[in-house]
Length: 425
Image (cartoon, rainbow, N blue to C red; front, side, top):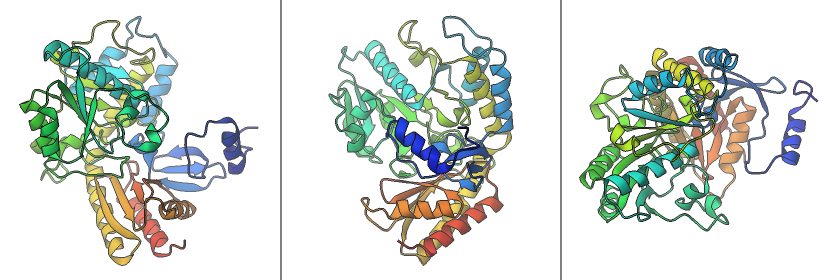
């Protein structure tokens, strides 16, 4: 049966029967996307306010990105890294210039990129900082989400992610997020190689730190000769109103892409998701020569990492961000969204807090994490034509594609407002 003949109910039943139950999706079956919109099998149109967890910053099926992918797919798709290919070097030059690092190590998924950064940090600690072999410690923040591999869940405190997947990988110490004193106490100990952190904790409910946290964290790491690793898989590439979330805040009024006034440069930068505009799995790690050159042939790699399609798509995706000024749009419309949601919080007891930066935002619902209220609200938002998803029970994350217009944003504000004010359990 083709998808054009299938109903949403039939598609859901098919997944439930033949697919592993490792996700709990909203009951909507998407079939087509364009810009900020998606359509289900029955051709109902929705605003997408999740953006594939910020992978679709450039909007669904952006023609420039799709064209780069299809053009390259007709020429050469994969060589492995056993050979050079004609696209990778150009992409590596482009992305290192774009983010101002010496080297790029390409991978595919976000979790792969995090694992790559962990390996580089450990090897750098042993070879450059004299840490005894197998003794390196990487400090992380509690409530983190860096992926779901065995190593990564080893330093998660989310029991759903951890339970029954042990034994766990050693070598990590978790401290409270947004606590510079706790960070200094941790990294001042012997054998600490790196601090790995999300500038904003997206999966934790858009947990946004104090304005000086990232800057202070980098200063503390520099003080103790510890690598500062920024996981910008979800927050990076214009999502938070700047090219990177480590750019922080400045008074440029949206006129720049990188907010240089407060830019905190990490030792290593991890990217993924929107690096392809949602068109293709691309991720990677950026670092300068003194760090990246600890990796030698045969010590790390990926069959698909750095393939010609990924290189073509990655270049196009970054060009779209720059040429369409998506960071500036995210900053402007993010301010508008939080302002409107704050007004809603004053009108409704259902909303207790609004937080975020740029177009990565969360609305905290006045109920316990164990409640079904946020899920129920998302179901009613779906019925009204807007797709969002709860995280941690009582938090709804709102993150539309960065190509959204002010008119579309106000339409969406109206949908959210009507749904909340007329909510019935």
